[in-house]
Image (tube, rainbow, N blue to C red; front, side):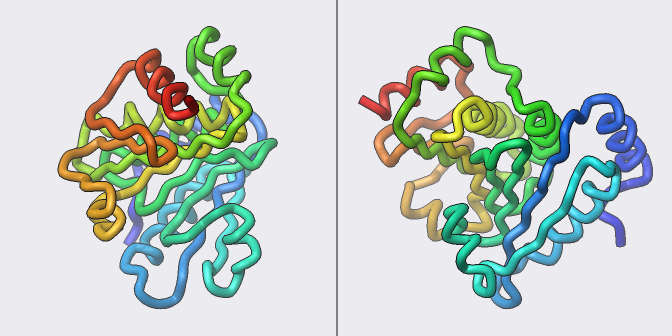
Length: 214
């Protein structure tokens, strides 16, 4: 059974035809056992990638392809990475379903264009960051405020390859959610130093990132 409705598929075909730039690699890491959502994740990227010749699907096994998993710092599955001209730190751990599906689609467009939709002021600040930044945003599919924060994390990652932005589906990775005391979403963790809940505007998100680097 298809995950995308006919009208959704037609929408994506038209959107990608108009908006996609360069080739986007949609990379899935899965494993054969103990991964409830891996099969669904693979079906999802298969259906999405089939809507445009500029979207290339790649599937790896986290156990069998350990070298790649280590290189790209993939430690849990399902994991979906979006690469364009560069190996961006745009990552989804868990299914980008519900409200996060739109995040997934808009991220594909941005990665294809090798640029974000952030303000020029934010872009200039991000270019100057010379230390690694790891942003984890915990979400649930039914949270309408979560995509805004995940999009910011991913757009920051597009602007500077030292920045990694992870969407983490809180219900799929409950042990990790417990470690960070995720009681409400979105919850953002930056470099294990800064923790905050809720959707915040771009300027404040940038302040949190810079504070984590102090």
